[in-house]
Figure (cartoon, rainbow, N blue to C red):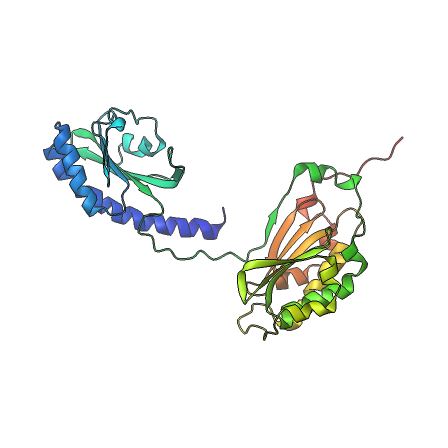
Length: 329
């Protein structure tokens, strides 16, 4: 997981831990006072649900983590969970080891298969003797998160693909596609669409001779153009003319250099070559997928700084597990 995602998740967990710890701590007293009376405990939990509008289930366990109440839900009691042994559940580990309040890692709920969290509060008598545990289950959809959008890191990312493809890399060679035969004219048209017709994200599939485009005017729907579409300059008539976005991360004058680099990578070698390349002018990222099925995601300026010998040399680790076949004796 990327550092940016880890930071975002840690921030949300800290916020939740503070809120939920305070809420469950307030329930200790009514639970202690009703301890041993199942009906009274379930009534106390039902009343507590009003103070926890984002809670899915509340329940109580004895000191051995066996359930002594029904699951209390917003719609009533679920008695089938009474006497359930929860000692082996991962969210009980910290509480059983002595932690006063614990918040589990996110997990998929057993019944609804939804991302969930469980908070556990240890319950003790006034003399610190352990009574049991208060459990609270939460659906991530309902929790009071800040919902700040996590931004994609622009750090260079390399991913290895299918091992079967990597292993057979040097047993296959590039075959000219229809797009290869008219690559210069097709690149000119795609550059025009991105510079003057509102295309902010374009992906060229060189091997299958097609392109996938996303437009500023309709960002939720992509367009697929085949070889015939990409070979006809009249395609520009199908997309309204739009000024190049002021907030684009890539200067319009540099788009051509990026696509020219795609062309060089496509023809750089008969075994290691570009299968597809994409450019997003709004976040400034270039995505590449090579014949070894390795993928790279990097900033556009970093991409332009790389020379061909970089991609063919040992600095291309996504293809490094492939070995050239040895000549026959």
